[in-house]
Amino acid sequence: MKQLSMRAKTIISFVLFAVVFTGLTLIASYCDLSISKILTKNTLPEGAYISTSVFTLFFEAMGSCPIYLVVSIAGAIWFWWGIAHKKIWLSVIAAILVFIGFFLTLQDVFKYYTEAVTASLNNGIPVEVEMKGGFYKTLISAVIAIAEGACLVFAWSRVKPETNDALFKWVFVIVVAMAGYLIIHFVKGPVGRMRFRTMNAAGDTEFTQFTNWWVSNGKRKPYSAEAGSALVLPSDQCKSFPSGHTYSAGLIYTLICLPDLVKSIGDKKWTRPVIYAVTIAFTGIVAISRIAAGAHYMSDVLFGGTLSFLFMMIGREIVIFKGAHFKALFERKAVPLDGDSAETAE
Image 1 (tube, helix red, strand yellow):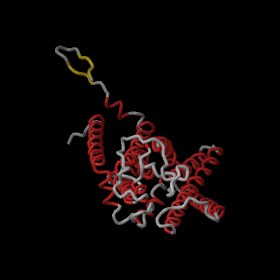
Image 2: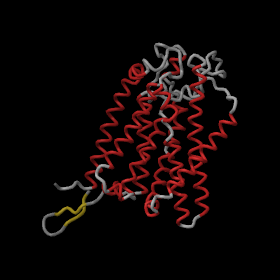
Image 3: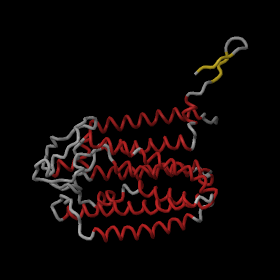
Image 4: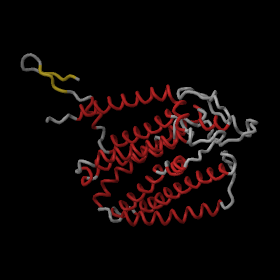
């Protein structure tokens, strides 16, 4: 069987992506609120802001970890690359990155744990207070991060130098993918989309304050002390679109680059489909958990996860393939004419 050209594969990939994304966007646009009502039925008690489901609480705390963990992994790669190429200054910076990645992971987990605990003591409404023992929490996080970092760096020493050199490019794909989070950060505020759980906590059982994903509501915190509200909810109460959690979870998509960089992985036919399946499944589970928690709607997680995937693919194309797929799309082929002459055409 004749193999498809890179141009044909690229066109097919673009078309499939466009069809799937458009279809899911249409479903989300028409069914956002209905889907949230169904998925929160047994996970978000009436009047609560924080879910009581183990499933949603677990992935609220752990789902965003990939965006921090890839920092530690990138640091481990840079550390040994610096040692091998006698760039000690880079190894020092890399060691700090390894620590930072693990430290931020632990701090994030502690933050969501604290939120869940305060909510359980306050009828499902979290209380934004400085918990006693904050210094000890930070100290514990730092000590554990140092231990985890040391274990990772030691374990990475067993990676062959040539393999680590190949993975050096992976670090830059990670950087591009992480940079895309800036879109999430700067879009959330101006869109000002009220979370499902915000309306649930406020007793808006008819969900009259629901707005579609394309509506810009402006920055707002209606349920805050500054707004004169008796009900005080977290400051992210109207930052539903797009989902930062799902984008962060989507950093796991960077694993898709491994078969492109490591021959021993790429040579196995089953690795690519397995990596795609695992990364899509993990991101999808986190996305579902966010809807079930009432934190996001389907459109929020769809755009969050898709943006993460797109930025990973952009980084992959730039760093690993040097734009080969885009060049293939616009390649010029020789088209025979009458007689012996020929000219180029799209």
